[in-house]
Image 1 (cartoon, rainbow, N blue to C red):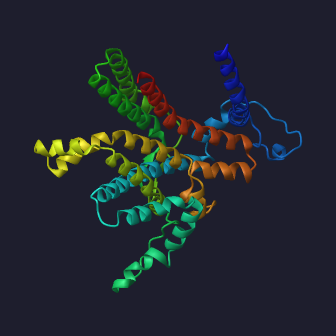
Image 2 (cartoon, one colour):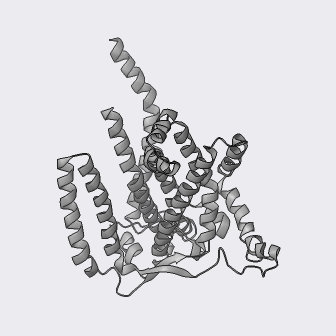
Image 3 (cartoon, helix red, strand yellow):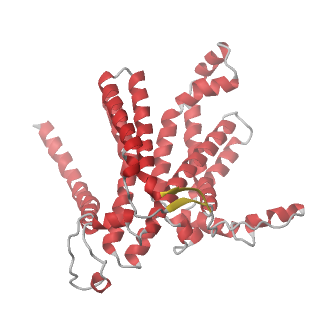
Length: 372
């Protein structure tokens, strides 16, 4: 009786939160998904009408985003997000790991340096964007550093450059997607082989063969557009990546430093007794033990980069197409253009991208906890 009473009490305590979560999170997600399947706002005369005539159009809005002639900016935004995510995660992890290694050497003033490195994280992206916008002004900031040694000032347009590198044809997107899926399946296959999981190994091998067969045979035949459309990495993103890495590298430093301090000293001494040098100690002992921290940091930084908005808004403004990202385009499309269905579709694409990063991590984490 007491057990049932405690269970009923717990349910009643959680019920208000569950109801509010269902309405204001999942309910609004459902409303956004439905709006993305309509034509609300595509007709300017009906966008802000009291009783707009909304028609269900299915996935037409999504098809226009990925293959329509006028939505080339959205496709470039996806490419911008991809490159920003890669460099942001790599820079934050690399600098954070380096700082953690330096602080782990028991240097004097460690508390002072740790506070200095963590300070950028205490700022909001708006403050960081404002400061770095001043630093990256074409006629000031970093461009004036060469004058300190008697050289001519730099001329690089940090936030306004339109030069692109690493360009590719949007028509090749299915091919590159197939290669990405194949790479993920290769990692799953290798992991299954190491853990001697026969059933998962067989499934991953079959999936890998099918994906590779489609990638090298059928992917090239998929025609997304009737014309070539090139996209690439815009050099104006270099300054934004620098600002983002500056702010978040202290966070990864704190994670890595906690991981380093959690490694028993006896393990290090045992490795040294076995003849391992400092480089071998870090490569074969310490870095493998830091893999869970690296994965957690990649997940957190990845979802931040996918929905980045305020830093770019503060640094480059909302109307700078060269530094645009899907979150910023969603804001402009929805609240300036009143194209609510297209804005909702962009929001759903962002949700799917974030979910693709978060859900596998949560699933594996929960499975490992259940096994323990």
